[in-house]
Image 1: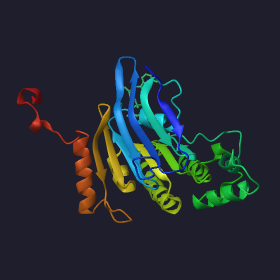
Image 2: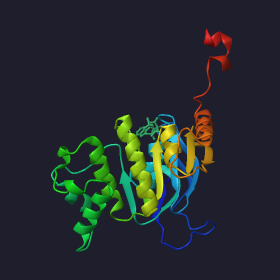
Image 3: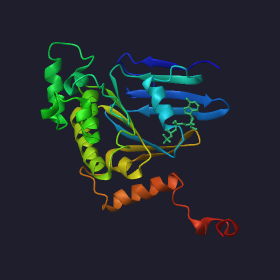
Length: 261
Ligand SMILES: Nc1ncnc2c1ncn2[C@@H]1O[C@H](COP(=O)(O)OP(=O)(O)OP(=O)(O)O)[C@@H](O)[C@H]1O
């Protein structure tokens, strides 16, 4: 099988589409006999916030890693086109323990003004006073804030986030949701957020894709007002639609009575 083609876009419009940030065509990926992605097509518009939902093992991280170009050993087919400036955030902050927080944030950033930009980014995430701390001196939530500062300081066109809040407690997660949405609105990268949390997807994204059995089973656009409120009936309706697509709403009444006993 041929290795798939991962390319950087040249910045001009992509033929046949409206200059998207990402275009994935016919992506297929297998591990041994198991086909995890089947002929997946995906277009992400510039500046759009998309959440990728799916059950555990549905292939979310595989797709994100392929878009990120991290899947070097991949055997598969298809074509992936991404912009030049891409940032990544993971469940763990991946701060380098031997560098102070500011040095982590500006690592690899060219130019004389790098430190200044790094300080501004730390201010934006509420860590203005922690520039010279070591990563181990920060709480888990603060480390993720620093990771967000690092990801946005290069003004990415695409932010790829794989369960970035998965390891945080519920209260910290809610605060991080507000922060990420605020940062997104200010910087407007295209975002692809992998999550298995329906509420996180509806709180943050403008579009939610549900992945199941190797392909998308739902592509839902959310038309929710800013400052999203889980008490809003529309929020609840989107939530129910997504839970249905994930197969999470079936209960014993829908089962064969013999199975339910
Ligand atoms: N390097 C690998 N080698 C073999 N199998 C793999 C590899 N990476 C992923 N898989 C398999 O591919 C499937 C999809 O994995 P993936 O991590 O993409 O799922 P996911 O939707 O992100 O799951 P989760 O929500 O649990 O993180 C799983 O069955 C997994 O075991």
